[in-house]
Length: 326
Image (cartoon, rainbow, N blue to C red):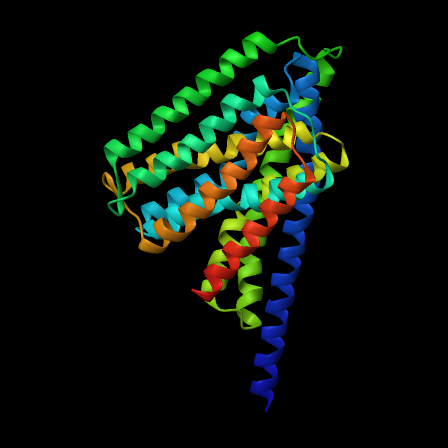
């Protein structure tokens, strides 16, 4: 009897430890997201570069770190389906869930000149991915085609930054502000990455404890979990009325997911990245549908709408439903 009681107490103590780590992860991403958006907003104001461009470059690279880490580590360990599923699933979650929520609460007008090229690059990247995986794999050559799109994206950002620097009113900059905001940006990034990792790991353990199937954990915890920095950035941006920063972040993160992470995984996998039938016939078409909903109406109307946000959320809900049923 004493042995049983001892085992029960040990399990409870371990569960409490998991819950504490989960809450620490939540605290990290909330506070990290707050500092991260404040610092990114200051960068935009100090440099005169529009917040949309800051979101599409500096912020998107930082918030993509969890996807890069998870996919690259999965490729190294030979879990190629997890690698490609995480990258494509994160893009779908970024648009369907995160951008959908952003537009639901904060529809924003955009400058078509800023958005059109980057939106077209994102749609092109998803379409090229779909076409290159027709034979059930991504070869090194096909990965390099995707990487070429990444180079085009970087060039477009450099061109835009040069032409639009000064378009926004500059803030007065001193050394103290510079050091403070660079520090907040770095610390915020670290907290976002650590917090998302803790939430994914400890959340997975909690889900297993209450009997959630492993497949459901993979679909929700991994894809949405690695997108937590983008989600926290979006929520913080909504609160701080910085919608352009959030949308730029999501576009940039999606392009990086497809055109940088997957080519890296292809190289790590020996030049061939296998693509499952489910990923090709289900994940990628839904990803393309979300990208088209985000880009086409916006370019035509020159602004986002709540209706787009609703459509994105409905399509994402349908994607999860079909995935669970399948």
